[in-house]
Image (cartoon, rainbow, N blue to C red; front, top):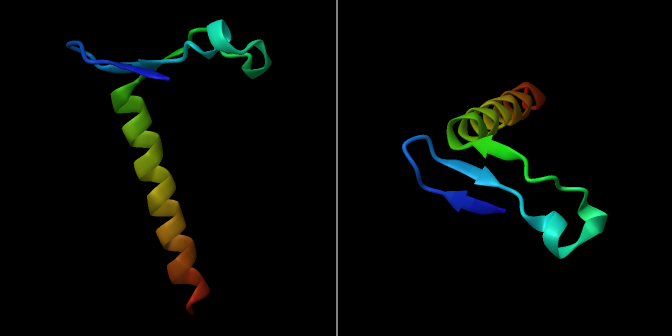
Length: 54
């Protein structure tokens, strides 16, 4: 996965060129979308940890 620093930064997968088993088709992932998904996953994980302590 390569990072492209533009006005709207994004990551793009070039693995299909290196390894056909990955089935990566040059999909772009906006940095802002990735950050949002990661933040939400961390929030959910933290909530699960807090809930398990009760």
